[in-house]
Amino acid sequence: MNTVLSSLQYYFSFPFVRYALLVGVLIALCSSLFGVILVLRRFSFIGDGLSHAAFGALAVATVAGVSNPLYVVLPVTAVMAVLLLKAGRNRKVKGDAALAMVSVGALAIGYLLLNVFPSSANVSGDVCGTLFGATSILTLSDFDVKVCAVLAAIVILLFVLFYNRIFAVTFDESFAEGTGIRTEIYNTVIAVITAVIIVLAMNLVGSLLISALIVFPALSAMRVFKSFRSVVICSAVVSVVCAAVGIIASVLMSTPVGPTIVVANILCFIGFSLIRKS
Image (cartoon, rainbow, N blue to C red; front, side):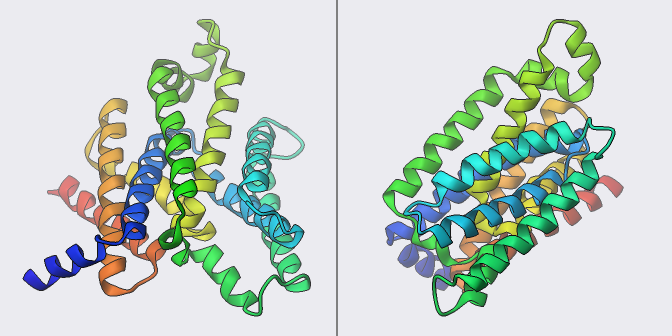
């Protein structure tokens, strides 16, 4: 025990480890809040589609030599989120079909571009790191941390300020529209915020594992609690704890950050499932 504590004290003496933990907790908190909404609205896999779209945009930004890929990835992912939301109401192209097209198309185009126009000698390693999470979370600059903190603060503030309207739109969109709530605007806001969360989470867990960060905390909370407020609070606590535990375990055991966080969420879900049955 003393050895573990000594190791933790040693690792946390480095700023990049503290940055990683702070960013990881903020991303996990944002993901959990809107993850509950996406799960309840049966949009769980939108995170998967948007993460692949973000991967494609990242590939384009890398090939184009953009200094900060965030300037390309964030707006492209936000636009795709709005388009996917509208596709869900399109009779010609259903939401699940549009999601599949975006996922496969963006992933294929992104990987093709990185192979045709490689930015480094280790293309496979770069792609694998982007898809499954890499050590980039441990190489965050002061600017990266500040951007993440500002975006996370905006996401949390919007959720708190418009909590009642988001609640109404989530459970009964027709009723919400009948009471005068402009559901189209709030749906667009939810889509754009989801895109922001996806882009932020890419550095933490990678493109292919983002859905786990969105879905697992919400599902774990729903195993025990029934009210919307209780589920949101529990999901936030579970997500933050799992992210912190995953990052700390990753640092101590030298395992990939993303998969370690996902495994922590899986174990938590199993634990909550057992509690429900007991």
